[in-house]
Length: 298
Image (cartoon, helix red, strand yellow):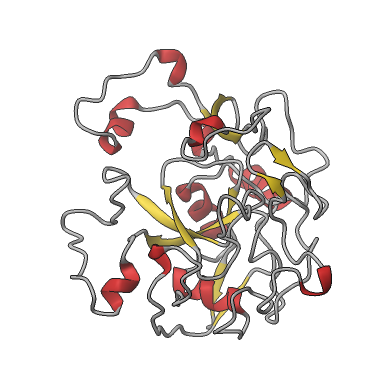
C-alpha cells in the first residue's frame, strides 16, 4: 500500500506491506439506477435530504462556533461550481458551494435531475447512506487495503492502475480534469462531470472506474500518517482520543476515500492513482464522491 514515489502526497508515504483475504467487488461504482432501486424498496432518506440537526453538527466544529442562520441549516450538499476565471488554488470556496436542495436525486440543485444519468455513479451520499445501501444489498464497504489492492489489478509497483503512463498510446484511461483547474475544463476525455460507468477500460481485475469519475468511500477511519505508523515511524493512534487523525481538520470524523474523481487535474491534484487517499467527513457528501461494495467469500 502507499508509495515511495516523491511525486505523490505525504499521506501516501511510505509504501507498506499489507495482506487482505479474498473478496468479491462490484465491477462498477453504484449507479443512480441501483441506488434508486434501494430507495424504492426501503423508503430510505439520505443525509442530504434530512433536516440539519445543529446539536449534532456542532460536535464536529471548534468549541463555541456560533450557530449559523436558519436558512443555512437547510438540507443540501456541496456542489462543484466552477468560477468564470482563474482563482487562487488555496481557497476551495472558490469552486465548492453549499446548495440547498442538492442531493442524489438533484445533483446540481433542486432544478436538476438524474434523468438520463441512470447509469452514472450516485453522488451526494454520506457514509451512512453508503453503509445502508451495502447492508440492503448483502454486501459491505471495502477497507482501504482491499480497495487499493483491487485498484492496482495486480500491478503492485506501477504508478497508475493500468501501468506507468497516464495516457498510453494517447488513450484516456479514466475520467479526470483536463485544462486549467477549476475554471477551464477542456473535457478532452469526453466528459466535464461524471461519466456513465464502464466508459473507460477496466483494469486487469475487470473493475471499471477505480480511478477517476468519483472518489469512493471506504470503511477505514482517516489517519493522515497511518502508513508512517505501520512502518514504525510514528506512535500508534490513540483511538480513545479520536477515531481518526487529520491535523488540518481536528474536530471532524472522517473516512478514507480513494481513486480521485473527474475533478483531479495535473495543475491542482494528482489523486488519479491507486495509492492516493483523502478524507471525507462522515456526515456529508459532495458531487464527486460515490462508492462501490464488496462481499466476503463464503
